[in-house]
Image (cartoon, rainbow, N blue to C red; front, side, top):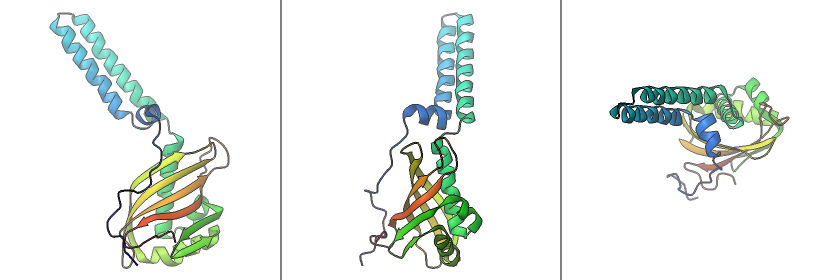
Length: 206
């Protein structure tokens, strides 16, 4: 078997959110700072022309717009953000063998498809986690998560995990499919879990 030691450059990726969702609702800090800096630049330019009143107005507008944008983004939690948080919680539950959390996060008919485990059904997968994975994983870190809401009730995540353990690989990428009970609901449940790449394994999905 040819072992894959180095992370390949052709791993799949998920579609990024539109610029408005990303920069306004999910990551507003950069555009907020840009608005503030724009206000400062305009203030300095107007002050150099002895337009003090207009300069103060430009600075005030930059402050108000920047703060407003940041507040709006902070108050809104998008479906993608909820999904990423749920995905991280699931990884933690699987790595630590947290059976109650797994029952909340796994669909009844969820399936794990891998060359070392091909299991279907929530309870069987919980048993796999508690009896095998949790015993060999000493620590874990979610390094990167991509998420794409693909329809009103379906979504997908791609997650990079680093683990430390006696026999477990160090780095792996996993693809997860998700469903929720209704559009707008936060009760995402994983329906399929499949490894994309695992350090030291060739074709880990089997």
